[in-house]
Length: 340
Image (cartoon, rainbow, N blue to C red; front, top):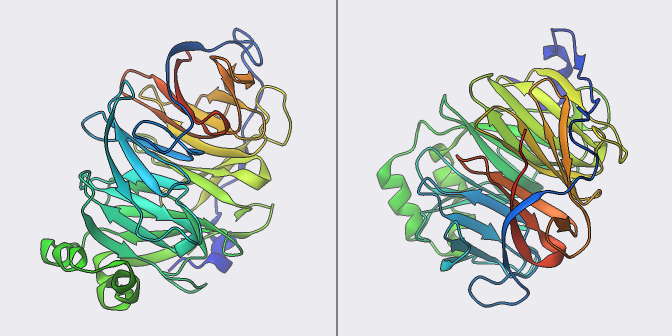
């Protein structure tokens, strides 16, 4: 079993530091091709108050979480459909959402130290995790990602700064229905009796800046074809690359604003062509990398116009390689075509 404090022993292959030179067919801070912009400041349907997470449902609709504790469901064109409301928001708000292979929405309920599971229609069907540093416990979970083998990865920070791995294979419809009848207090208290729904397997990573270490891992992305897990290691200003068994294969990026450098990468998403789209909160831009960690494009700059960003927090890519950017400081979603 892989433990957070023994992960270094598993790094048996040579660790690769991927190159970060940018292909200068694309200029640093170049203009994005803006397809559409939607949102605006407010609490109404289709408006946002500092949005910070996005994912695309199997039917192509968008789900966006903001600091009101809502997760809004929108069409791909930004039209409001419905909203899921988190049961508790006094301590804080979710920072990561992801659709699982079961078609449900997994929400990193960051400041309540758990992962909640909803149907796309908003029915609560599961919850796991509680505050702590032990197996199956979280401090501040940030994101969720899935591998084909029925495994679920959860990133967290706050001292744990690690990735925990769970199995989804023990789920049953009866267990899901049992969760649906619990209120928010009961769901949290019922963690122990229902933890078999998502079986804890192992964790890897510790707080730090060296090999196999993280400082606020803020987002996860799985490349199933290459069997890689990408981790946005935000406060180390880099992307860490692991295999799906928790062995580190390399990393790319370093702190800075040049092409290929990163400043607080808060989210990342995989394109259908295998390239990686990285959202930089600190540089107010998006970068496109190939699987070798080479920079292919840089888009965006600070501002409030089209193609300009204010503290972008999240990113998603659809099947047509349209990039949805969570422009948090401008309370909107921008849809770009990066090109390559």
